[in-house]
Image 1 (tube, one colour):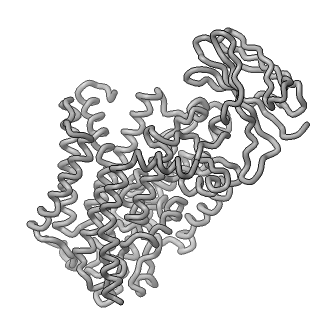
Image 2 (cartoon, chains in turn blue, orange):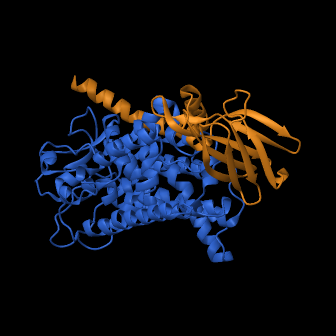
Length: 391
Length: 153
């Protein structure tokens, strides 16, 4: 790999091409099973094309992660693609089944609202006290049912901790996509106290949701209502809510990420992100800094997308609890000091082994959640190009 | 000790992939199991609560749901009762019905529903009954929610 003049040579653990191919083969089989969704391939040529393109994309990305050692660059490209695909897939699905993106009172009463992981922290306390879920969804058996989303979240939490936020969350890619625009940050530093804001939002919304028995975050604060579904505008209050959603989206998901070149929504506001940080205590993986290699250049601290590294944490050889294992520090560290790590093992244990052990479950989860969304989005776009309609 | 923790670490790390696969392979069973074990339901503030009484009127029927006063602990002072008329294609232009929501054998309010306009009026016969909270068209019927107070107003 040729580095730009003046840039330090990046030392990055990577696998040989042969080993990378060998490890990609099982991923090829797994992703084929996930995308096919059964023993028979789709007969619709457009659908078959979109599934094939998605399969190739997923496996090329996985292979490149292994063979180049660059996790962030490839993950990020796929993560952003996933988020865009989600918006296309979700919106078109609602339009074709419901005829509108607007959420009506009728949809709410009949439990037709897809459940989303962002609500999980807020349904726990009411769930314990009242044994009911304070969300107008369906418990089981439907698209994005409450039960299925909670099971997915539990599985991801046990296996991956807060890696959810950089490998699975279909909203995070929007934030990340905008944070990649522009060459350098217009706002270089963020006051440390601001990075604690998600915890404050989490506590406030958990309490308010428990008292009101309603999903306060969804009703008032979720920026992603602006690009998915939002209440039908029927009165002044809903107009106010809609303005709030759009403002939050523009500020937190578009403008601030562009100015900071960091994930502002995920790192400075999202209460689910704060909640999911606790899952880093459960998972077997983390990211560590090898103090013997670290030169204290501060590059990882300045570029961490979710503000999960500080000078102090680097000196301690660790990331903060909010680390999403996105791989940014691993990619940029010029001395190869930042690395994926299996808890309980020494920092000098094989970096390749730890990275591969992490990449497999993380990538399978990402493919299982995102593969279908990406292939459906490609199919919709192909339909638009060939028939003039996405439906 | 270090060797033991390293082995345990790698063991847990290796378990991550089976956990992920099991999550997806058994998703349907896991979600049904989760709901069965926890006994969770969707909050009646959204669903309108369980149906406690049904009155047949030939081509359509009226369903009275349990009053909703649910709070985090105990009950709230104010709530509502939902009355659903269905099926939608068999409803008369106007539904007028005496509703006994507390099932004490005495009507508590008279509900008048214009099914074409989906507009409703309530004539309280009990001091706990308030005005109409909302009228919502369902896939197969119309739901009317009427405000209630736990005790007399």
